[in-house]
Image (cartoon, rainbow, N blue to C red; front, top):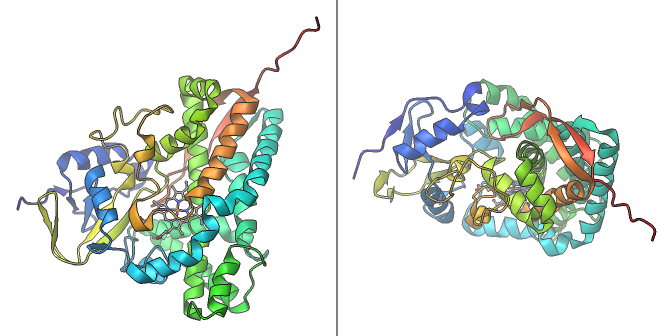
Length: 400
Ligand code: HEM
């Protein structure tokens, strides 16, 4: 078997997080599996092998954690995200049903109305920060109520989730700083479970109900609360912010979307492809195996680089371009793939589509200001995105 190529650079420095794509390109050119010397783990940078790893849950497991260090993999033990096989299927059957498109039908109208009103207020304002004033507002308004979070603790949700995503990366100083907040989130989840303090009718109730019926051991309740808590905000905020940025800086694509709003779902997929909100998670090989002819030893941890796979030139034509009409945008791995494919993507799509529809309806043009990138080990996002929007011109119908 050929020797696995090695890459010397730390791909989690501030500079790389701000502009990772030259490194991802170099990794894709090196091979289907690359040894990352700085992280002492393998990377899977190409689309075909990333998808193959995600599909083969028996060979590349999640149960030893999908983060890149032992601290978060300990904290995350027992979540749906970090479980395998029958246990995973069972946990997913508890958290999944409330997030299907059919289950979300009941909130579809109110989410659209919220987006319409929010965008209406911002259009009247003219200039605003598309992250603080738009991307964060909808998920923070919709998700905590949907899940039924206790009122006390909501103000910490963003900080906790951001810390958890930092800690899902390698154990660098950013991750070490995040440990206390990630632990606070665990304590909050444990307290919420112990007190049964979830608003009735919320999705979280399904977890407590399953425990009451004896279908879940009590120890399993806090990790499932984390499944709803950690991934439901920053990811969607990242996608909505990136969509605004891409549409503001690609006026031809904005014009295409205005002309044909049926492209909105594709535009959302294209955003998740190009700006993959989650850069990478990992898997552990359960046995000696191979990827495209390269040997991978049992117990090896492989970093699946969604953000790199989604720009693989073997799959996506002009991979760095934003193209709302791209015919295979939906093939991206930004929501994962296989048994662990994102359980909340229906909710993310509902929110993202609602914002894009409201913008298409009410905005004529979007002018970008000077943005600031966020620095997070796992989430790729903007901290601030100043924009100025111009309202859609009203059609004046002249009296005959
Ligand atoms: C644009 C927004 C989102 C993106 C890009 C995203 C991305 C992902 C990815 C890549 C995975 C796969 C993890 C793996 O392969 O190990 C995943 C899993 C998951 N996501 Fe999302 N996510 C988003 C929104 C949400 C929302 C709104 C929720 C709501 C609760 C959510 C809940 C979950 C859960 C519970 C899993 C674990 C599924 C399992 O292991 O079976 N996500 N997500």
